[in-house]
Image (tube, rainbow, N blue to C red):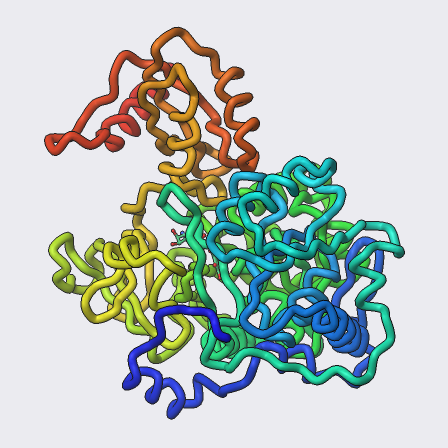
Amino acid sequence: MSISFTPWPADLATRYRKKGYWQDKPLTAISERHRQSDHPAIIDQVQTLSYRQLATYSDQLAAQLQARGLTTGDTALVQLSNCCEFYIVFFALLKLGIAPVNALFSHQQSELTAYATQIRPRLLIADREHPVFTDNRFLEQLHAQCPELEQTLWHHPFADDSGLHALFTQHDETFTPTPSSPDNVAFFQLSGGSTGTPKLIPRTHNDYYYSIVASVEICQFTAQTRYLCALPIAHNYPMSSPGILGVLYAGGVSVLAADPSPTTCFTLIADHQINVTALVPPAVSLWLQSIREWDCAEQLSSLRLLQVGGAKLSESLAARIPAEIGCQLQQVFGMAEGLVNYTRLDDDLQTILTTQGRPISPDDEVWVADTQGNPLPPNTTGRLMTRGPYTFRGYYNSPEHNATCFDQQGFYCSGDLISISEQGYITVQGREKDQINRGGEKIAAEEVENLLQRHPDIIHAALVSMNDELLGEKSCAYIVAKQPLKAVQLRRHLREQGIAEFKLPDRFVFTEMLPLTPVGKVDKKQLRQQLIDDNKNKA
Ligand code: AMP
Ligand code: DBH
């Protein structure tokens, strides 16, 4: 059985194969390339995993899951923190042809339920110490909503006798992998989204493999690469741009940090002689501030390349990276849906400081559309439209939404406003989608508004972005209520619904009514302007 998804049209598929982008290899080929090597592959807070162990443990876990009746075409919901087990599990599932959704560790009941009800997993692999799983209440709810969910495997950080650990260390030399076909779904990536329910992105072996291998080449990852993963391990950026999968492909080593704070990362960089890492802009600000305060640039002297992406990097912050950290900057503008752009290592400084790079592939078709869908000339701001050898063709099971974000020719409209220079370099100018980008963490306005509107005293809620010096954007909820409410009550209400902490509005504004556009939609532009004016008046 295979998982349904929207395939590329035959003519494009043929072209991508002919050009060698699609190699018809499963993603699990990445864990097998160096399987005879005892070199460290991944290092976390408790263990060092060699290439040989990664390959063996994922085989052994797959064998145990197979013995429990799990098979090709099944799906799994996985939620793990930044730990080696993430990749043991990832490769084990893919070796069996089981497609996982890797939830972020910050996700709570609401997000996990949304993913589970979409993929109907037979297997859950999660952390016993995650707040959602400390008692069995949520698990019971999940079983009630997804009767297909038969098996749960627990990861206990810092404990060796965990369910998961016992399975992957069970000796077995008989396992034969049965991955899904390379042009089929390998796993589901998460969309930052703009809709009420978080959408899932089917990623095929072929498309993802290509994006990783091409990224390795562009970023010049080699067996000498020592990569620090300070972002959430399940995110597309540290997975594949080139991320840990890129490092594994190249034969280098990845060190996992629990968080991107200077206190955590600087010691790891010095101890492990890290030469490349990936950050979001607010983390860069904190790093630069700490370097100044502690006068400790020396601690980071092994660092050669700092990738920054996930949200717009200002030119002034960009310029401080080579000047104050003494390493090269690479801007990364990517999306879990596919398209990834990089500034190149040999680009001139001005290009690196002021653009978000250019696409990975010569066959990434990227153009700028006006509101009518007509192409715009270079250096003009409009909608980003794209298709290509690793850009998806449709969200999972979402025909209505897909009809709104793809055009007739299969170009995906990402909701970003960009301009493209004559040289093909992209600058992100803004956003059209109803989303808040809180320092790289994406919040779909509608998702939070729906949860707010479940409160019995709320008549109307609208979530908009407001400028923030550190995070770039924060979220502000405008509320029309039946009776006076307090921000603390509403935060409690949202926490009770179980949403990721970063989605809680940073500010609440109570108002009599919301401004409407001529067609009767909430006028968010006006709300955002109101917040800017408020701020000016205060200053
Ligand atoms: P997601 O859908 O969660 O994968 O988020 C992808 C979105 O993040 C893009 O569509 C952009 O809106 C935003 N993004 C990613 N990288 C950058 C960047 N370097 N500059 C500006 N926005 C970015
Ligand atoms: O923000 C993103 O989703 C992102 C940023 C940089 C991404 O998916 C990527 C690189 O691959």
